[in-house]
Amino acid sequence: AAFGGAVWNLGQALIEQCYFYGNSVTGGTGGLGGTGGACNGILCAYPGGTGGAGGGAAGGALFHGGGDLLLLACTFASNSVSGGVGGIGGMGGPGVAGGSGGVGGVGGTGGAASGAGIHAESGRLAATNNTWFANRATGGRGGTGGSAGAIGLCQSSGPGGSGGPAVGGGLSIVTAAVTLANSTLGQNAASGGPGGSGAFGTPCSSVTSLGPFGAAGSGFGGGVASASDGLT
Image (cartoon, rainbow, N blue to C red; front, side):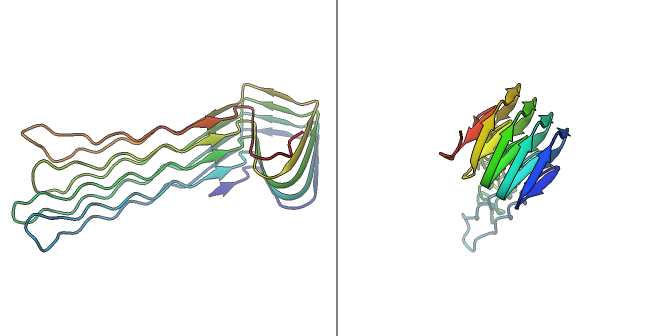
């Protein structure tokens, strides 16, 4: 996971008349799923492993994780937070003695993205006379499905992984108590990540199948997304 492109705060802080521009955090890419093994039997092979989930990311400009934070007359513009890409699914195990190879592994889920301007995890945040403009949270893309086992006919590849969610293009709030006063939010956005593509399966009657795409992620709160009852 990745937190706080410009500031990572867990204590008492006063930030006044500052301009946060073009900061970013991005979650890491998930690992590759393992390759399936071959069985002792003639007509069996193990599926590939699921790709690892992409890493989450929070607070493109500022991450607040506890204590009291006071923001006065600050601007948060063109900051971004992006979830990591899901890992590729593992290849299915090889077929033995003419048997079908294993099914490809599922692509990993894309990472979540929250708070391109500010992510307020916990503690208290009081913000007065601040502006959030053109900040963007984007969920990670789902990983590509794994290929079917190399030997054998008529076997499917793994499906692509689901895209990651995105919350709070300008500001995301989890359990923090947040007070906003005289604040402006404009052209901020939260977009879920696209689903990953399926890989090619082994041919069936001379037709090569493509595994299904993963579902797209959801986006919530282009300006402000809050899971707390402490927003005023």
